[in-house]
Length: 356
Image 1 (cartoon, rainbow, N blue to C red):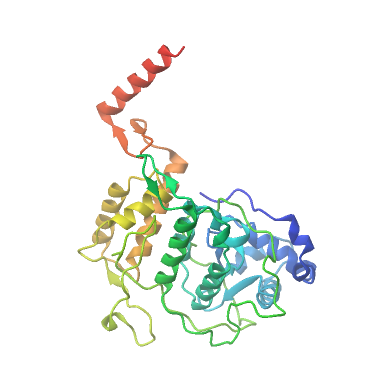
Image 2 (cartoon, rainbow, N blue to C red):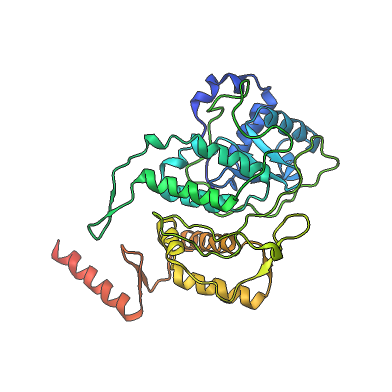
């Protein structure tokens, strides 16, 4: 479901780095954080032709200049080769890091990032999340037992992201994604809505003639094509080891592979889905996912990320269309259908009459 609004912190007008931008760059930044397809990781496709139609007289060349200014000021991170844009401070400033379930959706959205440069920048932002401010008291589960604290759950999501991105080499441009002196403050902007669209960006419609600023070479896709987590971890889904040398292309990218015959729903994957998208029947959707891609016979470099996107899309469908009329959603997330649903409805009706 697309975002309905963008959230801007009033403190943005006290940020000297933002004030030092030109009016056109400021407006473009506010435009970016109010895009409906901005995901929980702060990721956008570069669709300059589409964006240029949002104001009279605006051209792609104008947007190129504003992109360069915002990138150099480190409000955004751009990769021309992969046609991706990251709003650098989104996860921190929008409060995504405070909510474990939303952090799970953030990891899902981050799996869509192809650019190594953007991956480095996002991991640098994870280092700046003040985990010590989160509650460290164990959570109470419905069965009466204790679960991991909010701090531990968020830390596990960050660790999941690190494992997914693997070992990133230093930025060959020398610009990196740290916070050297002279760069913008820790909170250079107001950030978007708490409820951005789930899932990753769609294919770019950008058409560009001669980029005015060079970026890093096209990076490798996210590793770990087989979702086989190694350990149990507080709602986190961990990546399987990277593909072997036989799956590497000469340019260092992973060769896309057909869906593995032994693809299965693990406990870690199930826990992630239930915590992030409790409305989704994860077993049913996983089976549909497997059947679909077995029938298609198509190849993907990362089946784990494809499965996460499938679950996110299933949740989006439920939010838009609702559950079928003969389905009752229990507090546990387990649906009742058919006769069981009818009986449950009678019981609910009887209970209501007794309380009148």
